[in-house]
Length: 377
Image (tube, rainbow, N blue to C red; front, side):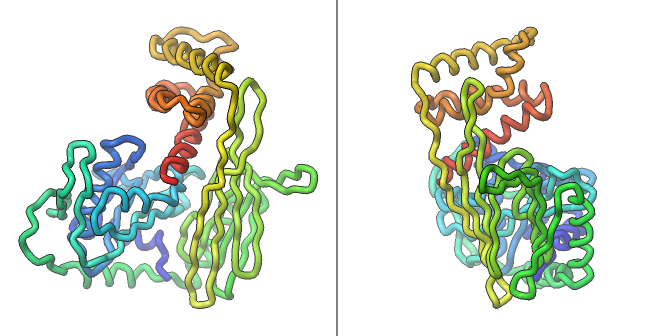
């Protein structure tokens, strides 16, 4: 089994990106430009590596080759995006890899592109790229090319060597468990062993509501691979587990006018097989709350007025400052209730919310995360 943290270190030892790996400070697939560039790199790496895995490492300063981290990205439906825009789409996996020196809410993103030995191309137009375009890696660049030659396999040997040097061992596993227990000592950390092989660590702040138990500040990590499977600073989570599975039901807090409820968002089950493999299945179980349209029109207009004040740099009243905490969530609710333009307003608010405070900006990121899950499903 590959220790993904060690794999990333081995990839970064090749300081310059090449035809089997790329590194990025961050990606943003919320917008067409970011989505198009991400698809271009997937296409190019897939075409340049017909026989071996290729990788994108996200959260690395390109100039200094330094790990700086990115936000935890829990979109399990990224394959849907790949399938929608690419012909002969490769199987793509996005994983969040923890590093001890990073803050709790930061990880390194690792995109693994499996080989398919077929030509991958854009299926349709997106941003400035045309449907039918074919991309290859040219050194560290993803370039459009006319495909008129056989794809050569030049990287299998070196990629195999890198992956072999990243194999997990008992020392790495034990260190990973001790690191997790120490880091999460305030949140009742536990470790579980599945199928006598997989070591999973998890922690959370326990809260009992009547007969049900929920957790917040949840962190779940598969120690064998150093993969963070789940992280949430805001949501409530219900957790159950058996001898060969670990289940999570994630809830999100939504509401209007200081009246909030928790709604089920996603059900995830991690199944551990007896052949040293595991599978993660995620299903969106979210049913958007419905509200009176007249009330929503009032809130939508109030949000727009508040956004204009932010644009002009005007001083907000105490009530407006309180409303600001719910601006992102209420824009999301408006969108889910038939206000399509609310999402444009939400994205437009991003730079202003980011300047205000971390808690307010977190509410924006949470709203975008829910939106992304709903769109990809």
